[in-house]
Amino acid sequence: MDVTDAVAGGRQRVVGFADVVRIPVRRWRTVAATTAAVVLVTLGYLLFFPATYRATTVVVLRPVVTDPFTLPAGGADRAINMTAENGIALGNEVVDATAQTLGRDADDVRDALSVEVPTGGQVLRFEYAGDTEPQAITGANAAAQTYLKVREAIYQQQRAALLLSYDSTIKQVTSQRKAAQKELPDDGTTAPGPASPRVQAMLDQVSKLNDQLAQLANARAKVSSADLSPGAITAAARTPVPSSHDHAPLYLLAALVGGVLVGVLVAHSREALDRRVRSVEQAADLVGVPALGTVRGGGDGGAAADARYVSLAVLKWLGRHPDRPLIVLSSRDDEGRTAVTGNLAVALAEAGQDVHLAAPAESETELKEILYAAQRRTPPRPRLLPVADPPRLNGVAQPGVGAALPMRPGFARPTGPGLQTAGDPDATMVMEAAVSRPSATPLLASRPDRPADERAALAVLIGGGVVRLRPLGDLPERGVVVVDAPPSDTDERGVRDAQSGVALLVVARDRTRNVELTRLVDRLRSAGAQAVGFVLTGGRRG
Image (cartoon, one colour):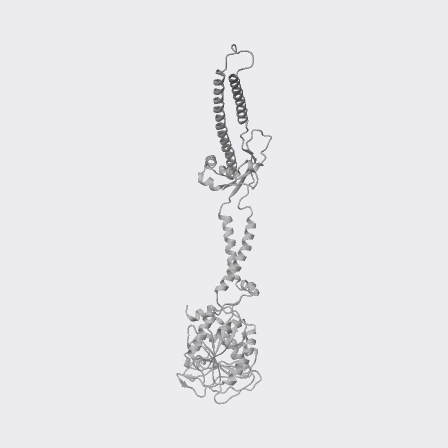
């Protein structure tokens, strides 16, 4: 990036509230394309991707207690560790058993199975995602049933280990009781009366062992009679099962709204990155000269009316510099420069000026259309057109040859040396100039395929003035001269002509880039040319 680009890019434009709406409206193609892309992606998802069915089975857990009619004082959520239950529900045993039931790979089942644990409850929701409705239902129910079986098997293992522990303890206490009983005297030899202290101690020990055995037997009976069922399925999965394509219209509506929002963001992003002239103030800041006016686009006469206001400032400048040409410059061809030049020449002619309009061959067609339309809008007043600049052939002036006069019905036809007249008395404009040559065919000044030396000036009477269309480079030394210069990005002739005259810059709103305009201004300053001002055209058409 050179210095020009850095300076132009460093000028930040403040985006106001009106721009929030104006930018998406002006860049409606970007918004529409983004919205269409989002809708097409959503539509492709609905059409080309298979639906995913999600079936849910609800399992209510219960704590394992010896008395099924009592609950722990701490509540259900404390009696059952739901984190541990969730881990068991998603464990390898449940996944492997479910995969075997469905005939699928265990990794696929693990990806499709999910378990939801509500906070503060003793409920597990088994959700299984399948490609078909039966597959989803079978997967959810199989996972829930497998979990209950696995959990009950765990409880059974725990009960068996506990009963084994009780049995071992009871066996040891029984052995101790038998040993104590052997130390007691026989029933027949026991003397009447109070027992001796040793015998009484032995009797107390046997009594304690009997009580311990009774407690152990009671505890073992409770463990053996406990209900090991971990819970029950309260809501088995069944049809209909919701799928990912159930709300297709809602998805399309959401895609439409979301696409519009994304499109607005993309439009603003492009606006932030696109450094173009948006207003007169921004252009004046870049150019450094005042604005002479704004010219609207289109062919409804608005451009001609705007050009008349611009001509007021130009006439004021011409009064101070009568013999300096006015060079209309722009960076590119699509900025409305030719239309501004033609309408400005017309406005000067309507003000009574004799205007010499120089333009490249590629601009002649558009300029002629502007001149023709202006002559129909403002009919010429009768006047003689002197031959100030006779045509030239191969660089040699042709004396006695002049441009024919446009005639209106009822006006006297001027005659005399140096004048040619039209053959049609009703013609509103005569565009021919005769050149002495062997052939009797007239030479049309409007033919761009002729060499520059053979092209004669095209004179068009408009109101009280006249516009003479000349080839670029054939500029008279005196008079009002307006030049439609070629774009400065590809042709330097406009900047070269501006060294002897003055430049009028044409800036197109929403089309001229800041870098291009700054580059044009720097080229003028480097060449020592002066810019009298700029004209802002309408820019893009929606």
